[in-house]
Structure formats: C-alpha cells, structure tokens
Length: 200
Length: 200
DNA sequence: GTCCTCGCTTGACACCGTGTCAATTGACTC
DNA sequence: GAGTCAATTGACACGGTGTCAAGCGAGGAC
Image 1 (tube, rainbow over the protein chains, first blue to last red):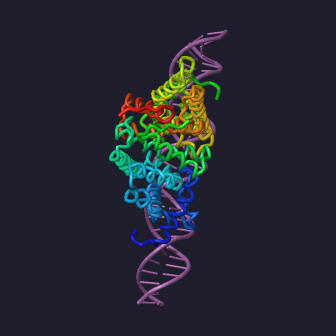
Image 2: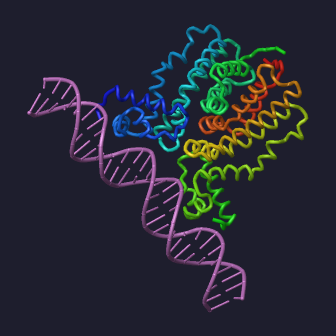
Image 3: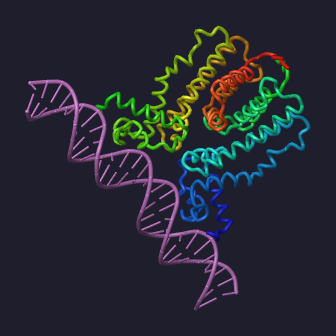
C-alpha cells in the first residue's frame, strides 16, 4: 500500500510505455508489462492496483516525461495568431507519435472502466481547450477564416489532431514524421486561416 | 454447422447492431447480444463461431442493410468534381452515425484478433479508395487545391471522414446530425477545392 | 400416430486474463 | 540478531470466451 519504490514504479511505467508503442493496446497484458520490467506480475498490481490505473498513470508519466505543458503552451514566444497556431500544431505533430499507443489503449479501456473513461474525457477536454486557445489567437488577429464559427474551428482543429488520425496514417500508410508534421501544418493553415492564397 | 435459419441470423445481427450503437464496444458481451435477440448464448456461437466473426458479419450486414455501395458511388449523377465531392462527403455524413458503434467495436477487436484486423484494414482501404476517387474527380476538373498532392488530399479527406472524429464530436460534444453534415461539407470544400473564396 | 430431422436449448466445462491473498525471501538498518 | 521494507511465490476466485454432448419441441414424411 504505502511503501513501493519510485524506481520500480518508473520501470513499470517505462515498460508499459514501450509495449504500448506498437499500438496493440488491448493485446498488452499485465504479465507482459511485468516481464518487460523484470518484475513479477504482483509487483505491478502492488504499484497500480488495476490495469486501468496503470494505463492512466502511463499517460500522465509520458506527459511529465516529455514536459508536455511546456511544449503545448508556447504562446509567449508567438507574435501572431498564425505563429501561435503553427506552434501548437507543430508541438502536437511531435507529441502524437509518442502518445499514440498509450492513448489508444486508454481509449479502449474506457469501454469497460469508468476511471479510464473519465481520464480519457479529461485528456480530450484539455486537448480541445488548447485548440480553442489557438483559435482565439487567430480571432484576436482577425486572421480566423470566416468560413467557420470559432466553436467549429476549434472542433476542426481538434479533429485534425485526433490520435486516431495519426494512427491510421502512420501505422497503416507509413507517413514519416517530418512529412506528416508538414502536412498537419499546411492543413491547419488552409483550414483555419483567412487568406486569399493564390498559387497555381 | 450447415443448418441455421437465416431469420435467426438476422435477429442476432440486428441485436448486435442495436447494442453496439451506444459506442460501448468492448463492453458488449456475447450473452448481452443473445439475450437481446431472445436466444441462447450458444445459438450465437452456432451461427458465428466467435465474437470477432460476429462483429465482422455485423459490419457487413449494416453495409448491406443500408445499401452502402449505392450511397457512396453516386458518380453518375454528379456533373462536376465538386458535386462529386459533396455527394461523397454527404453520403458519409449520413452513414457514419449508423456505422460508428460497430466500426469502433471492430477496431478494438483488431488488437487481439487477426481476422478482425484484416476486416478493419479492408474497410479502411475501401474508404480511402472512395476518397481517392473523389479527389480524382476534382483533379479532372482542375478544381483540386494546389496546396496538396493528390495523395495528401486523399489522406486528408480520409482523415476528415474518420469514424473516430465523428465519435468524439457526436458522442462527446453532442453535434446534431444536420449540423455536422453541413460542417463536413464545408470543411471538405475549404480544404480541397481550389478557389479564392472571399467573404468577410 | 410415430418417426425423423432440423434448429435451438441446457448445462457442464476448459482456458485465459484480471485481480486478491497469505506466506516467504532477501537485503538493508539498527 | 531483530525488525522492516519491497518484491516474490504460488494459490485461488471471478468473469468472459469458446467447446461439447445430450436433450427437446415443432414440422414433415410415411
């Protein structure tokens, strides 16, 4: 209950992270994670109690490990709305391949576990708030496309960054990281930024 | 083995469809489906063998029930590329809420079952082919946006129509059907169609 | 009317993954 | 050497999937 070593905890989280990277969410067993961490199955239960709790902890661990807040809130350095949008989308483009597997596992777990469902909803809401902030920055500049209401623009950006998208494009079609990042950036601009962009 | 009634089969499929509509994919048990169909659990196994096979059959049943091919291939009536795009996106906007739950369940099953994974990949490829056809129509007109290669445009359209998107917007944010359909149509146009559209 | 077959039911069970428990080990401290 | 702490070992309950064998009721054939 109250006395587990932080090092062991970290080893378990790292093992879970590594195994979930492949995208086989539901197929990753508690015993697989334990073996990968070089521990007994019971050690894992000692530290996390349930599979759902471990998945939730793993997403939080990754966020912390990659210092997500710092990456996703670069508003101070951005001078314009478009820069702010680029920074946000770019940060996500870097983060998504890391979080993809874990997030997918958490999403699947949501079907059967209420805690996991709550954690998933919270992640989704946080993500949408970030999108809303980027849209607000465009709006403040007057560079938001008039084609959509701010709410719609927020939801579109959110959709664009959805983990599921990344998964079917990377895993199933083999987009490399730099190429997809570039595509995400161009798409976000074209969708959301007002501008008569004329090229042939 | 060789002697099950088609009526019973249909009742099972309809029951599965109804239960999966809620989006609780993994939480729907074989026994739930049997009870809903007014049959014994074994009747379900008699007809489909495994849960994965039932999910695959359910997606095919829905396609057939809704005559998906007819809905998604309206190319004969479309006169321009943009009309073709609108028709395709519009058809998906109508179909997605119906297929959403079943597709999610199939996707989750893919983690642990190879047959389900193959069925899921096939659905994804079919979907992408439809997107490619719509993009080709735009291209033939010269109305495809120069911002993206045809391959990228195809993948973006595919992403836009992804079931996961629909789920987080409808289930989690409560978009009503007509509003989302309209949003999908406008988004597809803005993303893919070349045009200096100037409104304030 | 009885027999047969067909389609489903009943009840039992093996298997596997999750989650729990109690007893044990081994290392480190005092 | 005693005590403590973190993890191990091995056992087991539970629930869901999948399998099996025997049974049973309704309809058709004769």
